[in-house]
Length: 103
Image (tube, rainbow, N blue to C red; front, side, top):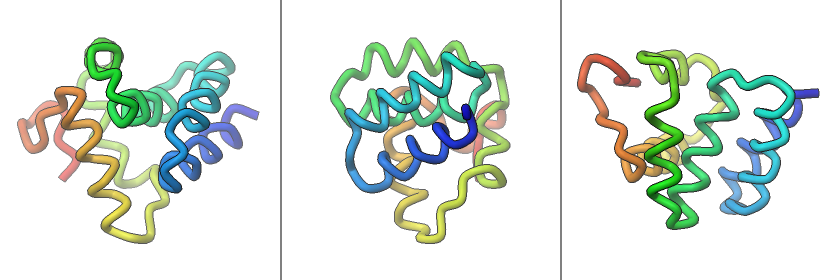
């Protein structure tokens, strides 16, 4: 069920339904606390202007975890990918810093 919840949270996030995405990501994390749903949760928190929570959650991700995201997130539209990356940056993620760089 966690995988379905993770993809649902990602779809909700992409559609701009950040509260729903956060709730669904929380359910997915409760079932399996791996980084995928946690990353969606961080982006949703940032979009909801809960940046302190997002930053704290970001620091809890394993180092380099976001390196896998281009392979695991099914974004068809590059603009959706950039929207998601921008939210992670609002949480404090440093793009291309060598430790958590996605691209």
